[in-house]
Length: 91
Image (tube, rainbow, N blue to C red; front, side, top):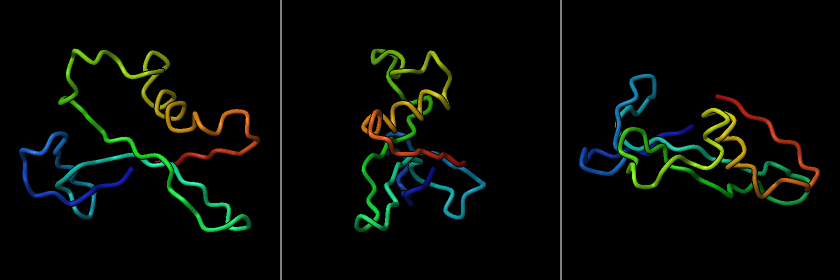
């Protein structure tokens, strides 16, 4: 998870996360391929943390019924399924 500095509190998803060096902005999750043997590392998916701002009309996120962490991991790694890649996660 990362933060993007954003000082306009009217931005959708704007939050204050005191534990971050830049606590005001949007929080997001990313997944990257760090395989240096096959080229440069690349970030290939970003998911904005919506929090309480997520419209109810959208319903639950895909795989959310399995838990927030499992759901996030499955959504972020979907393009890697059946590729033989190893996925690790930290927080």
